[in-house]
Image (cartoon, rainbow, N blue to C red; front, side, top):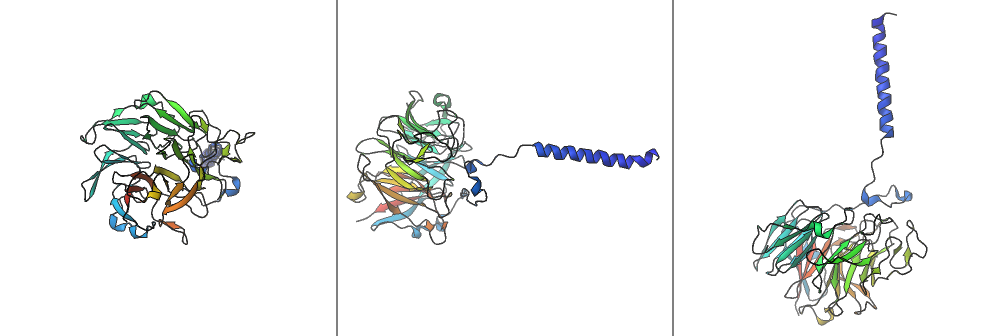
Length: 408
């Protein structure tokens, strides 16, 4: 056979050999990791269509908000107080009355100014890594993202105030999962900060996760107050006892009805809420096992519903609402995704003794979800009491704040 006749055969063999090597390389390449929210999903649920629900991260005009669908007890009224805050979550009120609002997905912190008849919104800072946590103290706004702590001094009077970077002092854990934060200053003047578990369910890689801590305002004096706290993104102090009460999210992928989200009371420093071995103070985990898993675990004050996404916590101390609402805990439940039938999408009350005894959960603000069609239009996330006794409720889904008032 002549040489020129062999050339096509050689070329084909070379191409085939190259293809074989390419196929082998692909076969050896590691599979892409599953998204973080799928961690802990059992093989039996591999075909589940359950997945986190996408937020609406664009401005929703007031005219497009169906405020008339909100249901409240007799005498209460809901109105749209502010719009134009896509993804708005936690709120903090400045000394001069401006409201600061953190976000998770958008990386923004907003400032809301109230002139009495209308509210205006501006973006204080953008492009941070989930700056859900905002707090205000002595003229300064504190912003905490996953990897950053910033302080804006005198920001209410100086919109151009440059941030002071305090990150190094707080020594933040690096893992992002459940590391977005809710922060607030306590009656003792300290800054309280939770650090969630870096997983849905797992042995903790280090002990700095699944904690609630307190710090001096400058980041010094760190103290661990509670451990075993999977994901707390809301807390407040009881008006009488001054004890911290906090919400906590239960793990996913353990069934529609298990475990519950929970409400806890910090009865003493060092309580263990159970994660990852024990849930609800009584249920051993099915994946991460330990002998006597629930021994020494502090039981919660109340069960807040399985996968309900219990968020903001506010004790009502104002004079506007009827007397029976005084010292009642209000809790925003953003709503479930890891459940066949949705739950939450509302604001509930936890009525209990000052020591947490005889707790019962009752509805307060509903109408965000249609039970029959399993659709929702809003997702209440946080609450804040105003000086006049009205209650503000942030809606992360529509980027709005509602004002709840009462008239006798």
